[in-house]
Image (cartoon, rainbow, N blue to C red; front, top):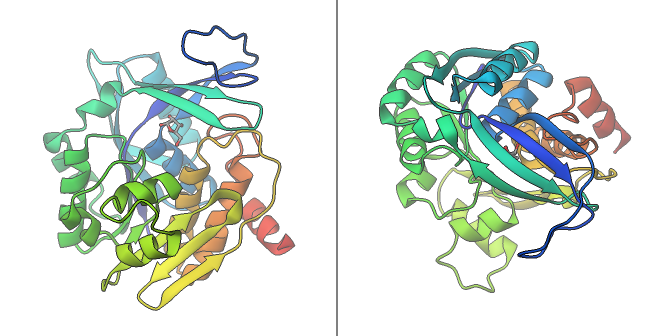
Length: 304
Ligand code: RIB
């Protein structure tokens, strides 16, 4: 099985359930409150670990209690932490998350140590992950660092999965260096912002694939995913589950896709695994609580 590396963010999530999202200036009484591990990069690493894939995290935490708790959490979930360092005098990244009764969320992030993943740090991170083959990146560490990482990984001949989240327009040379791009609906619009506002999904996916060998896997939550390649666009249906909290569904989807690729599965099967893993992730409260093992994801796939 191929070794995976995640280069990205590590957050502690402060999750508060609310009956609905408050309006500006309004005070609401919420319900359950928890402090749980999150962050797009770390979520993808932990989801890979749960799926049984060999995975190494490259990121930064603060020299605080959250950072220490996270390192321990990574280890317990099978994530290799040799490329995670603790930055002196800095706080671990934090995300304030409201989850409404429909399981939807609103997130505000204080990046902390994630914001210090600069180009000097990247040199060390790439050295410490040089033996990995499949790389997962997102956009919660500085964009310059992600862009440079993609360019350098391309030169190193690595397989690159970029989750363009949170949504921002991306430099053209970065997009063209990626092997797998996995936008959701908002991110798909952001990375094809040059197209007319009323352009449809298929037009946007086709535009991203262009004449390249790049694969676009457009995540659609309960509706599954669209795979776009040079050969055309294919819909892979999703799985129906009861959503409790959709936080990190996309992160778990990416991990499922990478795990499938790491095991050498055909692309469509890897996307089915991604759909199943993402679906199971939303059945529990908090970013990582519902992330499945490979057996649990395969059981859902077998149910159809
Ligand atoms: O993708 C979900 C993640 O986004 C949360 O865990 C939160 O930390 C934010 O980074």
